[in-house]
Amino acid sequence: MGLATLNEYLSAWTLEERTRVQVADTVLNLAETSVRISELVGRGALGGKLGRVVSRAGEFDEQKEIDLLTNDMIAAALKSSPVAALASEEAEKPITIRDREPLLVATDPLDGSSNVDANVSFGTIFSVLPRHPTSIGEAAFLRPGSHQLAAGFVVYGPQTVLVLTVGVGTHVFTLNREEKTYRMTARNLSMPPETDEYAINSSNARHWDDPIRIYVHDCENGANGPRGRDFNMRWTGSPVADIYRILTRGGIYLYPGDRRKGFHQGRIRLIYEANPISWLIEQAGGRATTGRERVLDVIPAALHQKTPLICGSRNEVDRVMRIYSGQEFKGDRSPLFGRRGLFRALP
Image (cartoon, rainbow, N blue to C red):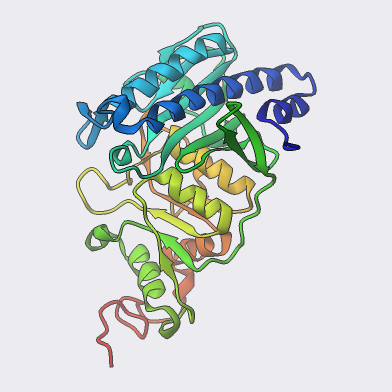
């Protein structure tokens, strides 16, 4: 086909450097597992009631049969990888794999699993980290995302695609289903700095804080508002699907904290969702922030810590950050009640 395979790309990247070889082996095992997951979810209802709720993890998170199946598949695959422990959204504490090995993996085995029965795209997110010198327990994972050695996600949709960074750009590999091999189909993604698309769950609008309400209100007003152009809103309810679209054509993804009980820090998990997504976005020329600080600089305090996530085309993310800091409206009256106000009646 003339397109480099994932194995060929990683082999060229390693240059026989030991840590890189170990990272490459781990990524390849995760990729092979994603092929099996793709086959499983591709059977839909013929594979059983994969979207059936089997338990509840915490106050808001339901665990579905497919969540637990994919978690077990990943844990089993990593037993042949140089990985000491696995942190998963589906496990309260880290899972010991091979305790003397040099790497750690953090994963959301099936992000967007609520879409399984609706036949909407969903995926697997992963992050590869260096082992902590003295621990493979929870404390070993409590390091900022800037420590990642590799990050990626797989989208299971009409195509199965793997989006990967090892710190030298963000690349897309598409699964050739016949040969069960990923081949590179986009090298060094470069996100446009400007965008006319945003992704947010507008059903939560009444709970947003003022900066998010201001930003979205300006987008909704389109060409008649302060932005002077029209915007489209896209939302699938599956972060990997929304982020993949934004990576490949630009846009901004917003999952802020809001006023609902349990959502003050948002819903996205920092270690195994926001951190890998943020590194992929940054390696493609975008930005990723909590609204107040760079996501990859946040030091986690807990394994399943949540974080607000605002990421995508850098000029739009920068605009949101300026609204949070107050710089966007410096010298103006309050934007909530002034000329651009949310509560000003239309003429």
